[in-house]
Image (spheres, each protein chain N blue to C red):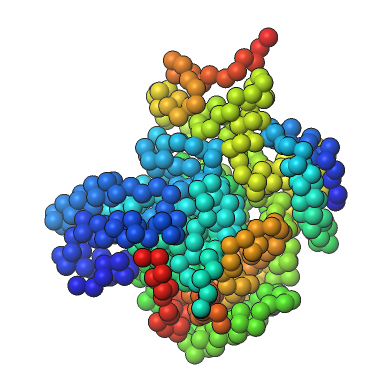
Length: 492
Length: 95
């Protein structure tokens, strides 16, 4: 029997259906592995082994009756930003201490309805604000990958660092994640995993802790493109409880994977050739272009002139929306409360102690740009720039099916390397953030290795609600890159 | 755009976050450098552009204005740090 931990979703489903192993055995192997590995990696902040066994046993019962769902018996890790009924949900913030939601997020509800099994809640940057998973109240996540001949601890990227690390280290078959400026794709690139950020509105935001409501979108982190298709199939839905969720039928993504790439047109946005881009990232990108040519696709250069303005506009829009969304954490309804003089003293003390430095910085930045006299100069201006960014994409997509870019400007960096300077940290999202600003789907696929022996990813950007084409195109990279190295299991 | 410590204190007050002297000083520098960096947006001509209000063109969904949920105050207040008889309890706000 193969090592159950190494199976991807598609393989595991087949094994379960054939009766090669039970859902309970499959869950147990993960529970044991998490016990061994999590002390070192800190990917899970809450393990739910009893729940996992109970859910797996129910899966086995359903399979015995021939009622298997699309994810029947598949053990998943859940980013701790998704509310789970009766299971502690904290967004990795001190301010949500002990919060046990009395409801289930739509995304996780969809997953459980399809038969998936919950292994536990995964670490993230506090309120999903960060690119390295160093801002979590529950400590940093350690990237399963190390540089060749070097034991320095590397970051897994963020904010979905726990999700990416858990999938890369085989501590779950797949994980849920969320992406506001790159939080699915950047950690996927840093850990050699596949990360899919769907079109805004494809996946319900209901029950997911809000960061920036016009940008947030949930998606999967998986080990293969096909698995990403399967996960999206289940996560995506039209939801009455989220007015921005779009009422468009969810296509059969796996069927779309079988389509041809020959004859497709791939756009290469020239503005992504930024100054000082490292040689190995540039070489990876060129390699990707060659792979598409070999697959019979046409390559054309496209222009997205407002690319460089996406990141500064993001750092107005996202903090502004965050300052509004996070106003609810006031020591009254849930989580932490620190008493003080009168009600304002209580608010101020609670929020001072409950929020970490990065979250405070963004709330203050957002409060400033929304304050009287500055709204037009900052927020309104940024939203107008956003229209320009979207117009760039609309124009370019008249001539191409998908666009190909690097996912990140560098491979994973060491802990502490960039945490001293907020602006330097923000630059991590330079290639991913445009996609959120325009509401488009984006996919990061492992494409090669850096000279230092770390995974690198290429990003594909698609048209709205055209995740099928995006996934189909993603398989070209996956197949051409072939069998990539796996991290050495130094943690077990 | 440079902001001073007094401005940091003012927005911290608006955001209901108590800041220490040390935090106010470091935030003064950090926020100033972020605000200076975002000034490059002024290079973009946005004269004839509407602000983006929705990334996907849709009409806002509407529903009947009826109660669809509720009736379980105990569940709603269950996570409160302080509650009494299904009410949230806060420090006295009226003299």
